[in-house]
Amino acid sequence: MIDRKIAYFSMEIGLENAIPTYSGGLGVLAGDTIRSAADLKIPMVAVTLLHRKGYFNQKLDSAGRQTEEPVNWSVEEYLHRESAQATVTIEGRTVKLQVWRYDVTSSGGHIVPVYLLDSSAAENSEWDRCLTDSLYGGERRYRLCQEVILGIGGLRILRELGYSDIKRYHLNEGHAALLTLELLREVKEKAKHKKTTDADLEKVREQCVFTTHTPVPAGHDQFDVELAHSVLDEDVCNNGERFCLDGVLNMTYLALELSDQVNGVAKKHSEISRFMFADYTIDSITNGVHAATWTSEPFQRLYDKYIPGWKEDNFSLRSAFSIPNRGIWLAHEDAKCKLIDFVNETTDADLDPDSLTIGFARRSTPYKRAQLVFHNPDRLIKIAAKHGPIQFVFACKAHPADGAGKQIIQEIFKAKESLKGKIRIAYLPNYDMDLGLLLTSGVDVWLNNPIPPREASGTSGMKATLNGVPSLSILDGWWIEGCIEGLTGWSFGEAARDMNTPNHVDADAESLYKKLEKDVVPVFYRRRDDFIRIMQHAIALNGSFFNTQRMMLQYVMKAYF
Image (tube, rainbow, N blue to C red; front, side):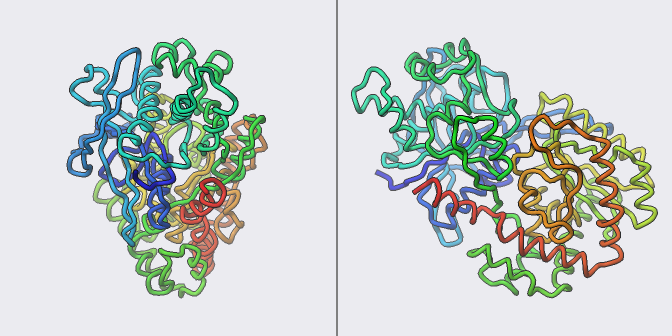
């Protein structure tokens, strides 16, 4: 028996840049969660899928039209093949699962093993061998098959590996919700129950923790009952039918029903989730980022000098006020030059290292409104002419099926051409972990403008704070908690009260321009000491709190033990 008390299940995990088993925020958060679990010596094991083709490589033509290509990487170079195997039943077929291991090791030597499930066994059919290949690829049938492998196959693999004394199963989003039905099968089998009892359900709930990540209804996986019956085996269907709602198997509803600890990922998000799922108690544990991973080398050296021990105690970043202004600015200039050099080597943007540089990088989808800042380009030109040059760096990927998200990328490319000679704009393809660090540490200001309250949390702005980069953001997600106006950064637009708040593009764009004109640009060019003071506060007040060390300690106290 292997002594691990917590099992963490996630459809995607950002282990390192070269391992393409993540697509964006959810996976990177999962990786940061595991890294902090290792730092804190939390007895955890993690389970995900082995995505041999990754999410996708983004190709952009001169007009910003996105096409996708599979990711080529060597599994054997990064992962160790385990001898354990398990099977699941999919559409009446037995599908054999292999498993690979990756160890996340802290600086102190504590290991959190991550197991990646692989359906490419030669015994499987050609279609079944591809089931774990693509992250968020294929249609509903493919997705449900993947969720069978993650939730049911994941638990069976852990049993085969010797993990028989796990006390809590943490479901990172609803993709792993079928795990609850596999636990229910085990409970009933042990009790020799043919029919499910309330006591059986309670024993499952006592073992499960569920983190929900999206306030957008479409983000909650649900499958027609007919599809569920065709994919799942009879026993799973019989147990799952009682959790079907309005003719669908809703994975969020299933996880809510069978978890005794549920949380959202920011205070506002939890409030919205309680409104959406009024029958459930939903707590709040605000997301964070792994400080050592997302702090650039120049700032790591700075913190090592002035705040020794900051990696072991992230809260000690409160002492950033003691760092001399010159030290902060020199570290920032170093990080900024790395970004500007990279942009100018890989694009024709010709960015200027002395110009105010604003960054925007996240998934390209309509509610995130990447193009908002170009809503009135003449206004932007006038602000730059009056107060000083402004330049932008974008890096967004649209889901292959998100036509509207792809169109937004093309709109930014059009703005890039129409504003040439007046506003410099760079667009970097293939946003990944390495590029994320380069951007969040190298820009001067981090921009975020979702339609509130659709941003559950957001973490890129948290990464920026660790590098002294303040946010300019709509009040949504984590920024509601992190923004002290003019002190840790700036807000604009109107905060939403509920999901029915319309998309006030004109008003939000005007509010953004006013904030740039009256605060951000003048402070950057004319009041440098004030700008550095804001950088210090971003580190001391936001960087010290919005990290996964604090987040994991909250999970330990509220959910795990």
